[in-house]
Image (cartoon, rainbow, N blue to C red; front, side, top):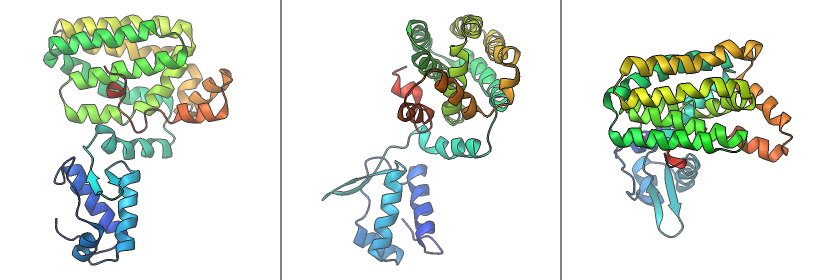
Length: 266
């Protein structure tokens, strides 16, 4: 570790974050003590303590009382979360999201068809079955996001996987709208099956087209909802479910800092 220049709380936090995300401070490695960091970086221990608290809140380190601070293994979501926050600040609409998903997921499906292993295909079958077995809108939306995340992973491209991770929260909210409408859900789901079949048979063009047809259902069926901010659309659907405000707030936070493919075991 070398000292960042200029030295200041924000500069130190940015420097340590880069060290952690780059892997130069690998997961499980113990960071120098507060005193050692303060001396090395030329700042006071309270400044170092505040920086470590910030990094812990971001999920980049774990602080164990009496033992010190340790680097966490970097997760895809650690990198994707700042991007997700930017999309929300820009009030991304459902149309924006569908257009982006068209660009990303059609090619991700095509690449997955070229590279997926038999195990990948089997896990996609499992993820697909979870959607079919889900008993309510929220469970189906969760399973649906996990399915699409698993396709991104099957591409074998960590950049594609990180890009999809950055939209998982928005995708979950979008899917609440789709699964709340039985006609849309029934029209869109068969294309899930076609995507998996194409990936298993190494049909790259077929996988690309099946994903395009799947995402195009929203373009055809959503009408003016395409022009609503994704979060606004999701709030409307959750209001219709008459859920408590605390539950709605929790659901609107889903996927923003997590990896559905990991959490769902897909």
